[in-house]
Length: 279
Image (cartoon, rainbow, N blue to C red):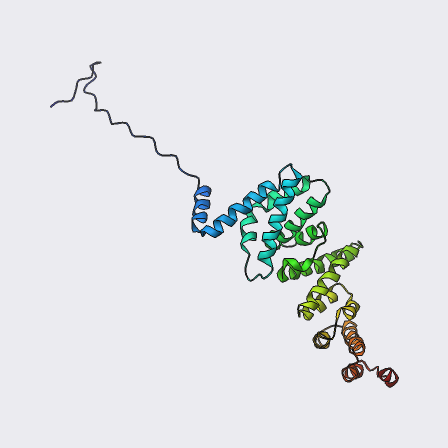
C-alpha cells in the first residue's frame, strides 16, 4: 500500500509518530539522599530525629514559654547522651544540620536566661561541628548559664580544656584579661580531680601557667597520683618549669604529711631542710 499523498503535491508524507508522554519530574538528589538516610534509621532513631527537629523549630518561637520548654528539652536530650560518650551521640548527629540555624537565631535573641540556655546548647554542639581553631565551644560556654560543667560529659570538658589553652595563649599575646578563662579552669580542675584525671588537670594548669592551683584541689585520695605525674613530667620540662613541677609536688607531699616522699623531692630540688621536715 502506497503512503498517502501530500495535499500540496510535494510527494508522500511520512507517517506521524505517536506522542510520547512527558518524563516524570525527577526528584532532587538531596531529597533522595535525605530520604535514604531516614530509611536507614530505626523507628526509635527516626522518632528522636523528628523530635529534635521540632525542638529546633520551637526554640525559635516568638513565645518565650515555648522557647524555654524547647531549649530545656533539647538540653536534656544532649546532656543524657553526652554523659558517657564513646562515639558521636545521636542528638549531636541529628542536630548537626541545624547548627548554623541555631547560631543565627542566637544572634537575634535579646539578653536573657533563654539566650544563655541557647548558648549552652551551642557550646555542646560545637564539640563536633565547629571549625578547627574557631574555639566556638569555649565562646558559647562563656556566654552560657554557668551551670555544672561536668554534666555535659568528660569529652566536652576535655575539649573545652584544649580550647582554653589556645585562647589563654592568644589573650596573653594580645594582653587581654583572662579572668573568665580562669574561672572555667577552676571548674575543670575540680572535675578532673574528682574523676581520676590528674594528668589532664596538671596539663591544663601548665598550659595556663597556674600550677599552684593544684595544691588546693588535691585530696588524700588523689595527691599521690598527682605528684607522680608531676615528678614524671618534670624530666621532660624545660627550666624553670621542671623545678616548679617538683616544687609543687614537694608542697603537696608536705600538705599531707608524706615526709618520706617530700624528702625524696627535696633532694632533687637540693633544698633539704630538716627543720622543715620536723615541723
